[in-house]
Amino acid sequence: MQELSLNILDVAQNSVKARATLIAISVEEDAAADLLRITIADNGCGMTPQVLSRVTDPFYTTRTTRKVGLGVPLLKMGCEMTDGRFSIESEPGKGTTVLAALGLRHIDRSPLGDIGSTVVSLIQCNPDIDFVYTHRTEKGEFSADTREFRAVLEGIPLSSPEVVAFIRAYIGEHLNEIEGGRV
Image (tube, rainbow, N blue to C red; front, side, top):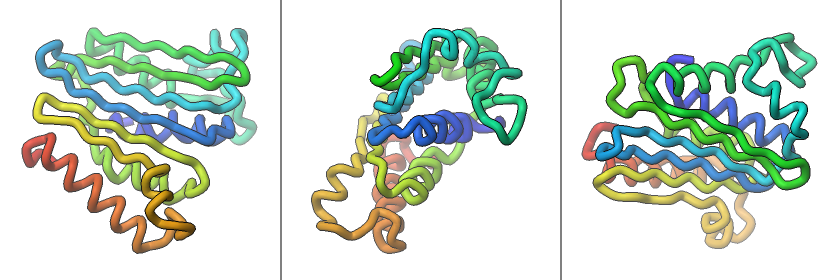
């Protein structure tokens, strides 16, 4: 995948398929440590130790529509290529946490891409799942939590066009603040 936001989308879609009701996506750009940390955690069905041991094998997938699963293996490879690290923790009935740490300034690191649109797409396409998106840089931090949006919206679906437009603007504005106009 050419952008890390697409890896995040793929891993989050795995969480959706695992029947998660809450998916937390965290992106931290740590310039001092020269690290880009991405964490995707869910409260889905989790994986057995046997499945977990094979999840980074590109020729292993639980999908019936194709014989390869490249999202997680490509993310792991991206971490390794940038002197970073990759880990997955999972427990049946409790959920899964994926941690990807990449060299922030490493020449081989894929760009983060349009993370705002990725998060908005996840929310729009999965309006019954709660998402918490947190992003940190040296300039600040913000969080977008669909549970907070739901509390204010009083029954208006998160997938309604007006709500999607608001969430898109909210995330875009806050990303622009903490990324110093790079968005």
